[in-house]
Every structure is written in structure tokens, then in C-alpha cells.
Image 1 (cartoon, rainbow, N blue to C red):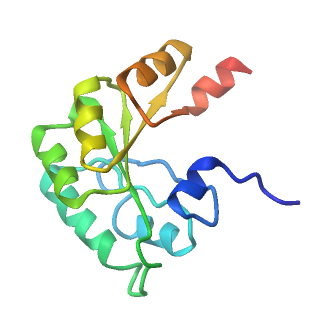
Image 2 (cartoon, rainbow, N blue to C red; image 1 turned 90 degrees about the vertical axis):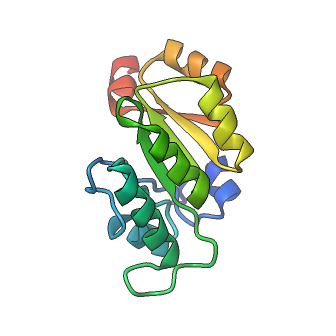
Length: 153
């Protein structure tokens, strides 16, 4: 059986349509994200204090658990919006991860800034109204939470 290939996997040059959740406070950090990237998925860095996030992005960009990462292997950063501060955005603008995944927050201005820096913006959504809002803000893509999928089923 062949797995379906999603547009975002082709866009980012991935072999597998795998993107683990960006669990916060370092759970999805610079050990897990590069390991997923090494397997040619999309390893996600979770939200953490801005200085730690900046360091985690640098470490993720350097290597995959001591092995060379595939050249240019992308990774996203999870931005849990109630906890995002200007320093988080500055860290993203400096490191330029391939994707910023926003959760629990909206705003077209931030989407425009990130996209102008070459960062795709995905929005995690929980219902149709949130999907419409994400698209109106200019998000590149929306991802449904498991709760939304269960509710819609």
C-alpha cells in the first residue's frame, strides 16, 4: 500500500508526510526534531523560552543527533500564541525555519511578517470558523487538531 503524498511534502522535499506535534517546554526539542528530519519527515520544535528556542533552532539546523542532516532539511517551529513574545518572533526571523505553526491565536500582521521572511505559516485550527480566519489572515495552510477531526466525524 502506498501512502498518499500531500502537497506540503513535495513543497518541503520530504519523503514522509510526518510532522509530530510541537509539544511545548522542550518536549519537542533539538533531539526529537532532527531525528524526524533525519528520517525525512518534518521534525517540529515546540514552544519554549525565546533564548532556548533560538538555541534549539541553531542546534536543529546543525545536525541530526550527531549525524549530518539531509542538506537543507526543513523544520517547523510551533508558536503557541498565548506564550509568544516579540523575542520568539525575532528568533524565528533570525533562524528562518521553513514553517511557523501557530496555535491558539490569529493575526494577519504576524503572518505577513513571517511570510515576508520566507517562512511558511501554518495555522492549527479546531473548527471551520477558525479555518476561515486562518485563510483570511493569509496562512499558507491549516492543520486540524485531533479534537476537530473527532468532532467533525
